[in-house]
Length: 242
Image 1 (cartoon, rainbow, N blue to C red):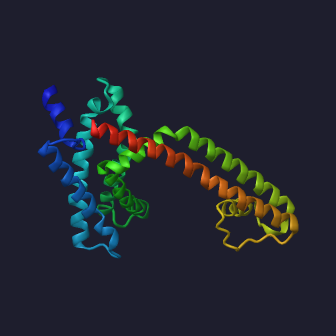
Image 2: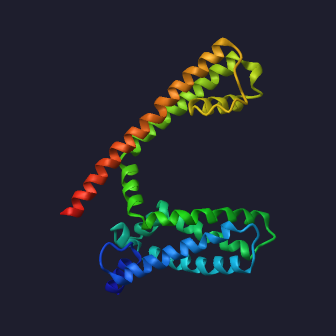
Image 3: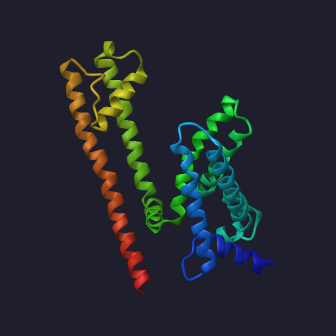
């Protein structure tokens, strides 16, 4: 039983070698994901789109169940905790969201259920599992997660502080504090739509400072990710050569 389960795990996992069965399964999933995105290009639902949704949803459901069944091998723990942990992994959540839209076919008149149609977009994220480049990026993001969180926290602190400043400097410019947060966000990202423009000298000076801070905010995480990506790419290349 364990040998059959292990073999099933080897098949459904992304093929890393000459396992033809595993590579065929990967190809099936890739085709299913790509074909499953076709209904998103149609303005109205028709019979072809419904057929695609049903067939791909069945394939995705089978894949989800099999991955849950072999979660102990994936997580490396022979315990019920492996199954619980697997359910809450990012890719498992994406897999589940890729299945949910099919239920809209059975409740077409329900507005609440209809909202689940937007989950079809998550199907494109299933491609991440089969991209070697995305695997590298995933490893990179995991390594620099703490640094990026620190940058995010500092950015949010600055946005909140600058919103408070501008809200006090030019109170007539904003209807509420959320508008001030909106202005602070688009200013620090250097987008500046121009729909909210300070008219006082202090307000314009704060806008200039926010734009300059935005340049640093964008450059800092970009540098962190680039350095980590190059390090991971070189490590992967060295491992492949060995």
